[in-house]
Image 1 (tube, rainbow over the protein chains, first blue to last red):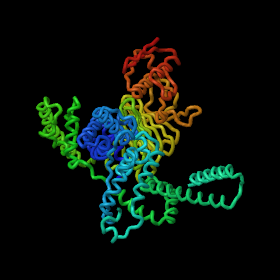
Image 2 (cartoon, helix red, strand yellow):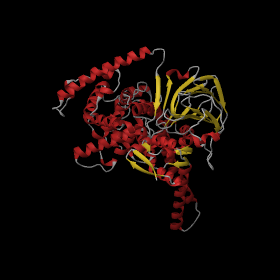
Image 3 (tube, rainbow over the protein chains, first blue to last red):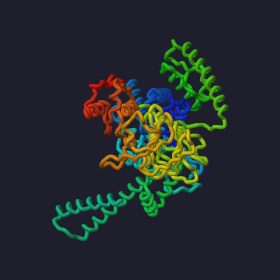
Image 4 (tube, chains in turn brown, purple):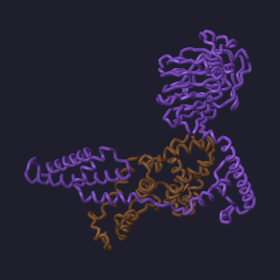
Length: 196
Length: 420
């Protein structure tokens, strides 16, 4: 299903008819992604859930003006970012100036695909590599890889240029790619420690 | 890649100048040898950087066709990286499953917070039975707002009950009209416009305070819609399935055309302007009479008693003896390829030799205001003009100065027009 098209339909349903079913459907489509995004900033599940809830309360409050929002998904990500940064500022008392100033606990799934059986060691190494990326790079990588967002959307959400997104994703890909084994012999993989 | 090579060449030129400066001679065998080594090192490095960029673009679904080709070519020189790409692609496919174990629970908790936030909560919203299951549960109150708990649970209980009432009422209603499939309605409020696409691809621009309804089985043998208000249609051609528009006074049958229909119930006339193609118009109270419009023709049907009276356009001046139906030409603005009748689609408010009374109705819908004209004679004054994204005050100012016949006051959402 074309997700953007259906978000647009739901947006119209909510804006014009205050359709609660559409509101619920929108929550179901986006809450996980927004939760992960918020979690990357606030590093707490409870806080992230509350922030996402606040975002959807706001969405309901402005439902009559919703038709004016051009890209609702992008908009909700931006509101989530702002709420998360407010939360950090309020709880840690140091206002966030730039994305590189805060620690980002990126939520990036690295699991061994079954047909490849990459060793546990290698997975650990990949995770460590991601941890060593810059905070900005990590959050960009999360949005692109986990949420399948377009570079243009990521740029708008994080208020950076598309060029930066493109570069940072290339950096992340290269760093991870370089620690991967150049060739993969199944018998060698099954013996532990291949990637070390 | 071309850019990268240019950078390399530039770097080499710098290196050459440096050598020239230091050794004061321009050609030497070992100097060329060094140049070649530097070139190879730089080029390999650039190529690898480029390769990772292309791989990242492919993984993110951002690579263009050319970039995919380039990647394919580069990978032939780097089979080892091709294998890495396979692994990366698999890693990329794995997605985070989400933190929330029971998504329903999270929504319920959210819904509770939402109702706490709003003064006019859940009661009037229709919903399905899954959200009707919201009950006051112990663990949702949390550390916040302990004091209002009992009131909240009472409100939530009332909400649950009324949701069930709504739900049952809803099912009863749909059963009654079971033969009619579900309807889709799109409507606009005064002061706003909307553009929609129907399931067959037909584009509809909906002017302010208008509504279009179509059935779920829209894609059947006939494409039928119901319209109140004003809309511009660009109908996708499909000879096997005619497109029919019902208004309260006329029905329009088309195959594939672009045209504007204006059918507000509080206006005297229903107006159809054809831009291209052809349409067949049937009067509701006289189905035998059919009129076929040709491009750039405009049909006016009087709303009170919509019968067929062909007439010349000169009759428009006498408002009292308005004919039941007028066929005329679509009006074009000078230096403007767009017909006046469809200017609203381009976000222009246009009056086409219209009485102030009619213009006021347009203004009401356009700016979401109420216009009161205190003098009957004033209502008949004719106006002509186009406004491109101008404010209510600018429009009123222009109208009042052009004829110098009225003064106006704007009071929030109310406009009062008085004779001078």
